[in-house]
Image (cartoon, rainbow, N blue to C red; front, side):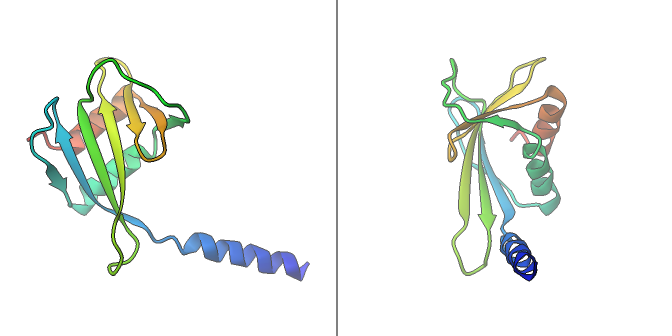
Length: 127
């Protein structure tokens, strides 16, 4: 029985070690992706992270018929002395329907409902 408690606490400790935090979101809008914009405000970054937590993901490699509307790059940092880890997402906004997202790092496809897509657009300034 003691062995199971030890294993349980070791697993809890390992899960707790991941202090990785989303610290920055870079984005490019439009077909030509002209200019890169940066979001560093903590509340806006956390809003974007919570919206992405609602994406319904599936492991699938898909091709879209048009170029993405937006490219997002998430910057995660675990330690100030280590380089950031990047995640890239391509996003297609579809009016009156769900928004489609491709996770370029994990080769997965996701959908976001229209209400969350509106919140995502509001969190990302259109410069």
